[in-house]
Length: 114
Length: 113
Image (cartoon, rainbow over the protein chains, first blue to last red):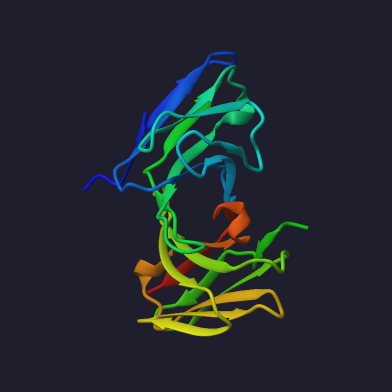
């Protein structure tokens, strides 16, 4: 019972390098999200996808791109990493019932940009 | 003003005491409210959700919602050292937002034996 799986769990980049964070869920959820969490702060929404083929910006989208590859997978790409993007990134999905539902999180991806 | 604000921590209570965590939100269109617990180095996990005004109890946890005051709280009775964690308040701003949640910065709770 995997739930939400993120890869990689840890990554160190140099300024200007690019990378993609992968996320997959096996719960048949339509909605998927990418959040970042900086020390002592809550989660800030980067991008989300309400369904396959759709994506929308959240609070802090600058410097990121996303792809909703299919219903299961939602990737986050950093085209040119900056030290300000050092953070813990969480992917989440939400079940489709009624108006709202709780978020199910992956284990997080800890990214350091030097 | 942040959309979701939580009482600043850290909060420290003795074992067996009641811990009270508070959260206010700015958008009156908010429809649902969540409390997540996050242990250090781990991902958040849902512990309570509430949609209607009033109290909702689940074991040692009680969530309270007052939409008129735009206020939601979490009470933890008989606090245990295992309750030591950061508690995140999250708010969903209506159906048209496709259920995206906005989080507060969290309150770190320490329960001392």
